[in-house]
Image 1 (tube, one colour):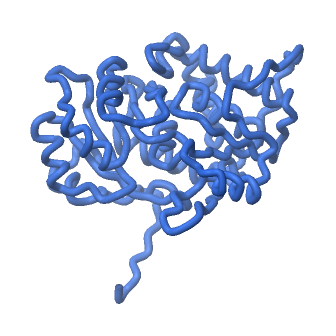
Image 2 (cartoon, one colour):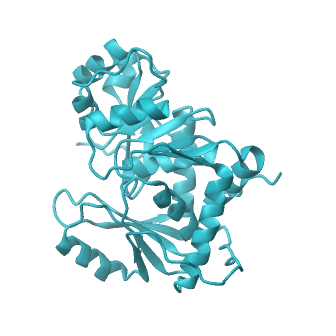
Amino acid sequence: MREPTPYRPLSYLEWNAARRGSSLAIWDDGREITFEELLAHVRRMQLQLAARGVREGDVVGVQMANIWQYVALELAIPDLGAVMLPMPMGLGEHEMRWVQEKTRPALVIRDLLLDSGDSTISPRPADPDPARIVEIALTSGTTGMPKLASLSARLKQVTFESFTSRLGITEHDRVLPMTPLTQGIGGMCLYCLRTGASLVMLHEPHWTPEHCVGTAMRSRATVMVGVPTNVIRMLNHPLPAATSLRAVAVAGAPLPPEIAERWETPTGIPISSFYGSMDAGQLAVASPSDPQAARWTTVGRPHDRAEWKIDQGL
């Protein structure tokens, strides 16, 4: 069995499909997709993309909710040598026009792709290159228009290794992103698939605590990842006494210690924070096994491969 190739995310799916193909890869609104099935979907999408004229170096925009097709496109597009452009569902008309003027995508996908025709020859995968730009990410645009960050294969590989190891993600986990996969925090969860973990899709474009808790229970999710606001809103929707959840991780804003205490005391589920940026990737995260004081008041230890500089006189 061939080991995964660093800087080529699809090789991790091929590896998982070869060693445990019938295991769950994605849970989406009750539909269960195995690793073998997901790999077949990705290869079919690559044929469809090639039939639509997508070539190496092209930018491809994708604007979808958290559904299994988005996950498949995240794998299919960079493997062709094209550049993934995640486009949040909430982009306004002016922002969308600005983004497309800046990135000039060859294709924007909002619905399912068309049929690939009679083509049966799979496009050649791009060579693994740590320096290659594989994604253009949109920052939050808190103080103005969104900014564009170019993410290299190296940056995403390092973030994958650090994020999943610090949270202890294994093939026994089912990870539920509570925020859009098209944005930083939710997109982090895609790395978990490489380890053999399953991903749980919320499916609905608008987040509600009722739907999130219900999805977590139905899918038997073990880890939930989101922002502090998700946790705050779920405090009024208690989890059932019996739950498969083992950890919650949040980012995007400081987690107030009192909120962490209100979550963890009744549920017994460790909550931790992580920190990073769209440009630099994830830099630090607290592990579920860290002491409460560390998890509730810090973002954990810097990752081993993260580079830090402390400025004086701040």
